[in-house]
Length: 385
Ligand code: FNR
Image (cartoon, rainbow, N blue to C red; front, side, top):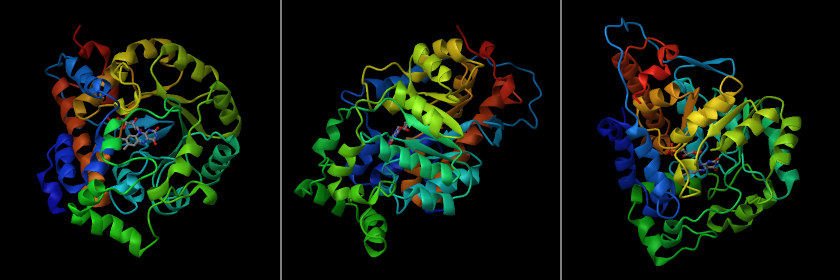
């Protein structure tokens, strides 16, 4: 095993180790939340408030976290969330992470704002692939991307519904991680202070394909990250609406997932318009700082659409017990964002694989301790109160 990984015993450890490895600008871009980070903290606290009532004296030999999603098997009820700019933590970080997900037997979601193209991912990653769409102000650009993903065989289209206005993330401005990126004395020092990252990530781009770009964008928008104002502003789409869901439903032949739902009414509307799944999410605390934690929003949403659609949940999942709690409250599966990025930052695909291995071990251990042999045994009566 890569030596950096031997020191990681749980998902929190990957964060600490990645913090040392990555320039501060890159680390904080991944790690932090919007404004005062109330939602970010709340995502963890909401999981931690939930208490469980273990079922004892149950034979739990041969237990399994195996699940099924969209009619296909999964080794555990987890998928990798879309995260833009994953290519900044490792050379072609998206491809590494996609390979890790394939190896772990779970789906990988490629973000619109990835630095590895969907064509490369489809050709080289293997496994189950989903494509996340940030709709563009010019719909023809977004629809052409959707068509490409359909032709490449992506299993699901994940429309991000909760981020059509640029959120307030002040640390990015302080770190010079701005749009457009401006090299300042501070950001130059930051990079120089992390020579392994500079050589191993940026060096490999420089010697190979050139500086990282948003490779899914059409060529005229595919500006370098060091000048990504054009591409970013083209991607903002303040008039995104339910009409887009209708249009995408007509365009997209396979699973349609709406990401960023926190209200029962919105979940119902998504189902009525033909969505196959919703992701109950506050974007990892990166958008509305006063947003409810998804795990707290889940019961109301489950009441409204449980049994009618697939319910996924993300934001703050860090332990196997969190996955069990989400299942007990009605989620079919969870997504994880930051931990797999931090794993990738340490050792590419091997790092992502290690994160997923630890999470699966924790889920299976927790199931055993709670008296559950299969996911079907994770029922609401395990929850206290
Ligand atoms: C994200 N997320 C995200 N979501 C999305 O729909 N499109 C995107 O481009 C991105 N980009 C992105 C970048 C980074 C660095 C992070 C950390 C997150 C949100 C992501 O899909 C997911 O909702 C959260 O990351 C889940 O929370 P945790 O697991 O990170 O706590």
